[in-house]
Amino acid sequence: MDGRDIVEDLRCKLEEIPENNKPRFYKFRVEYFERKANGLNDEKVGDGEVMLILPRHPDEGKPTSADSSRTWDDYTRHTTQPMSSKHWGAGPDLEAGEVDRLNGCCCECCHVSCCKVCCGIFCGMFPHHVTLNQFFTPTMFSAYHREGYRACLDAELERFFSGTETGEDK
Image 1 (cartoon, rainbow, N blue to C red):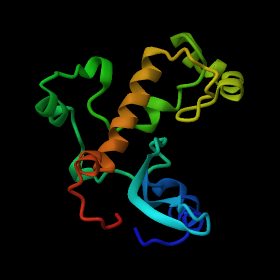
Image 2: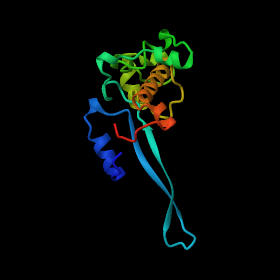
Image 3: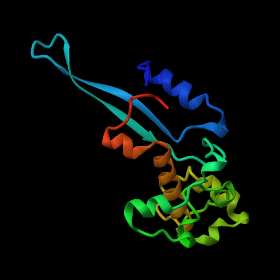
């Protein structure tokens, strides 16, 4: 984190990045101030870091290198909870073909190609479904959770929360 203007930083690190290489997270520093009793100036009372997790379509986000494809083994090792590849796929890394059909609203039959145009307009497409849609199909639920988990892995969220980061920007 280089401390520059947040709007300029967002423009450079998120908006102007090519579609197929957008990051799945963004970190920035904040400083907190309180007005002094005299009311004339502010006093710094703290600082911190904020991390935004940004789920992406597989074609939009930064790709995972071919030699480091991830499976659920790490998840199972950390949580002792087995992950069923039948319900959750082979790992957190989604393929475009898995999510391109995810439109519609509340049932698996909406994920067919004849519904794609109408449902895509009204309900959105992965990962940009409208928030009015509160009925995710099991396939949509799985895809959003897999992409969210992948974004957390890319962001090294565990290191962020534990405070063991070096403070360097990725």
